[in-house]
Image (cartoon, rainbow, N blue to C red):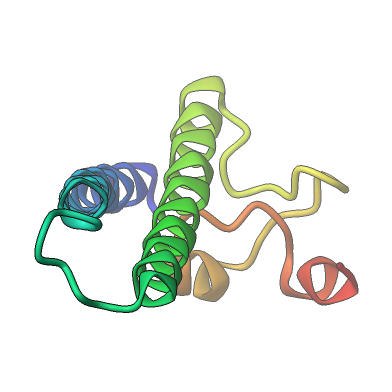
Length: 111
């Protein structure tokens, strides 16, 4: 994949992830603040389950954001497009599907 194209796609995804993460964190905080207020007759377990789901979604977004940021760093240091494990070139088709890929498909299957 051309480096400029990869950088543009990664930066776009980074912005989207940051916005989603901000929205998820904000929504979770609002739910935490409103649970247990006077007149709240809902089962407290429901609130805890919702909080756990919000936390899991936020963690997934953080992990993906970190992956995108590592890919941008590899672009900066000239190692983008090569496996971080073996140094083998990652095929363009894989990078097209996931510009943040840091392993070849075979290496990723081994994990």
